[in-house]
Length: 281
Image (cartoon, rainbow, N blue to C red; front, side):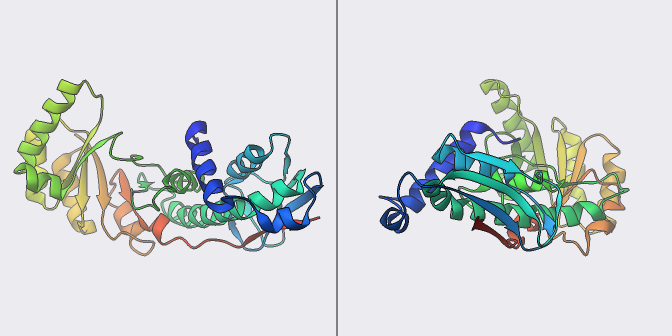
């Protein structure tokens, strides 16, 4: 679930960006005391996401805002349905409108695409991970949308998990050196972080197995056949993740191997925002 202070900070920064010195369109023609209501109209089929975000946006602008939900995050939405009704000062409705729509349209697009991936994994052991390929300053909500769509959040950033990727390994002098240095560093700093190591070949996998001390092996740009061969070598010793160019067309072939996770940045950066609108009543 969303961490409240992080969500409030994101929203406040976005409101500051949008409102600046004032919403002069609204200030010019609407009395400050005017109250009103609006509904969020769904104009495209998909998976709904961002209901809690919308509520927080309006209530940050006006704590007395009343939002009446008709649907929940993660539910299937159909063109013509109403997601919620909101009652507040008209100034609140107009200042919050665009941010609510920007967040919910983007989040619903991501949740919808994630759901399509997850549906293809039904019946398989494999689970879907997102990545750090996110929009700067919007990662919190993009990853929340993945979760709502049925995916699993990978690390939030560079701080909550160690991932030794190709560049780390090359700069550190190889897999064994990178892992040993990392283990020593985490012990010295008393950091209880998991370690994932990227491998680019079966020989890399053998080296990781020899050095040990890690939690997950990433099989990067492996074909499904190569993933199967790697899983035989790993034999359940560590979690496994297939990554690199995996999409809706190839997803099932990777799931058939029995790999624990597949990661796909596409669920975020290939997602298309869905059509929603906020209309005055």
